[in-house]
Image (cartoon, rainbow, N blue to C red):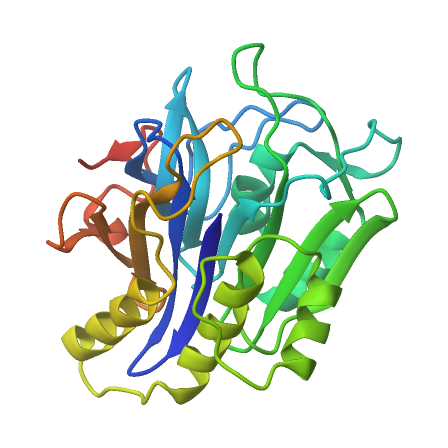
Length: 286
């Protein structure tokens, strides 16, 4: 369970709630332009745009939940159980594993139009990062200030949808979410993915733009708070509480990443431009 939203105010903002049953030691991470990101089927990614986002560091490699690059292009992966389907590598295709999509697309693309060209060659492959890190079923929202799209790899093939609402949650597939939007005549109040999608789209449409950075960031976190999941309200199949671990908001124009965790309302921030963007080493914040 997760919810991602976009917001145009004084600048353009992109962020999400990450909803899981436990934390994974995720940290705010800047991947500079020369960090060598290893790939399973493609050449190592060595020259790319700098990224900032929340990531788990595994064997020295950042596995991003979401990120924004230095050009203002953003992307988030959200849980998509029972519907995500990954393929075998195919000759002549852009063969990327799910955890490689964010670093590769944000590393190589400056705009959503460049992303669309890359997606015409994409094949999402079912190769885990390691034996101890199995594949996660995901779909993705990709946005710049012009528009957003949703990417889904399913048994029916790769699906790319224009996303005029600039929001995403989890199941059902995006085309069914669109049908739900068209037939909705009330604002739902439960924590289901369908309800959070409708509520997020409504909040984004009604939220007034603000003139300052502080007001815009506060407005963004208010919207996320209304689609967050308090601990104890939702349980996994195993009976574990499923709740919002953190909320994030990135000013994509300035490369400033704001976030707060579930145990605190204090908003922290990290500025990607205060790290060495031309460096080789990750810059990791608390």
